[in-house]
Length: 464
View (spheres, rainbow, N blue to C red):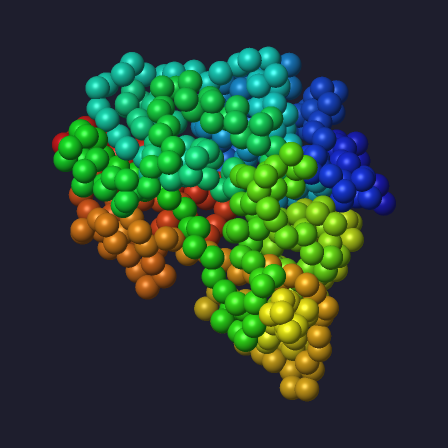
């Protein structure tokens, strides 16, 4: 039985699967003006908006949708940009279905408001019409250093700049953006169209970005504070060190980390014919893992011409990737081998990958994550043919910064210890957040940590 008018979400256009599987253009085409207006009209503008509580950066969701409903894009964008430095990015890659949209009252008896798609629409309209985020405070003369230009660092820098701080971001790579630039593929997050303008908006607030600066090598945190006059430092360096399974054959030719594979494609444009960055283009690829990074790697390999199989040791119900990404991957023809775990990577006489030997799994008792632990099924081994294997098993922070910073503690997972208020670390004046503290997580959670740290840095400097 059909839902009453207004209870169903306005559909959004996408490239057909058979077309998009062969290009790197954005999959989702976004709302038209009429579609956005119709979807915005469904919002009830609740007096106690639970959706805001579900957002890690507390976006004024009813406020920006109300202005959109009134066809006031400048006001809608102003309300958005007071809360988030990266609305066009969040609208595309945030897991709204488990955050703001999961709290939406409309979702009780129908479809939740398409908050992410409306956020994307407003941010895109703002970019197309030249709107910029407002600078809220006069300069206060205090300097803050931010390490890393990913979502956590950009958010912290943007919020501090709005408070009047003189902020400099130090980025190790030759382009800013962190995982937004090197990790998430073009077909989910266009770099020139979306990422670059969002970073430009951060610069427009007065934030300076210095690239090719490796903290711990080029300069240390102590030198930033003692010699360059920075009164506080925020570490948002992410978690870029890939993890492997340590199974036989893992050092063979044709085994890649998802980090390398995606960085070559996204940051270095290896998928383009005019790129001079080499990349191996196999015919059959096995991607090990079930998170968003695994989906990104699998869908990228598919677009490079490979037949792709995703190998995951739990069931589909436990897949950590967004449901939308899994749905898109299946539509595009990617095969999923669930409850399957690799035990050996097979090689030929040239030490090249020729297959992956796996074993079937079944779910046992829950482990520390709360998910049921997969256990092997005896006698169930089988082989998947492949000439490349991409390991997408998660990442840990690079220990370089901590090793070069006396007084900065890390835990057993090499994550920076930031147990104090607002991400305060064990070193005075040094704050941290995002994947450098939690290990690999989502863009929006990293942004939330950057936002919280900005408040802590402001309080620290004012009290100092």
